[in-house]
Image (cartoon, rainbow, N blue to C red; front, side, top):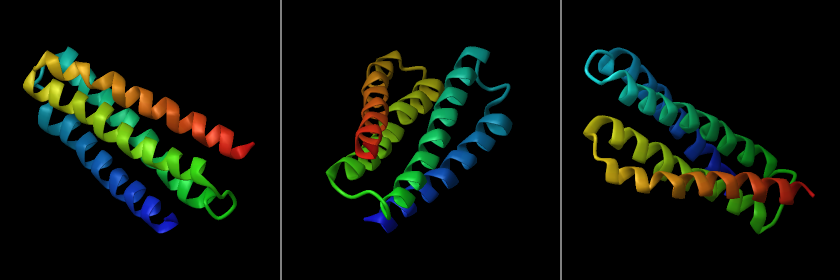
Length: 120
């Protein structure tokens, strides 16, 4: 499972940097400043949690149990739901997608909580 989280984190990092560059160079001038800020928020949290996934992979050599696995899956799900919904919201303008964003935020919070409890 360690390799899986390392791979997911590394691929999430590749995608996060790619989307960040796309936002900075491809979307500037095409999106309103508000929508561009939403897109950039998605990229920022995407990258934080790509790194968190790599951290989980490294910590799996020291911590065992379901909590460390739950942390990794929560971070991965959070990237998809939180950042993914913000990307789609910014590009499509569909406000309904904003209803998904808090679910991703909850996944991020749970991931950090699981990691903290695993450390205990």
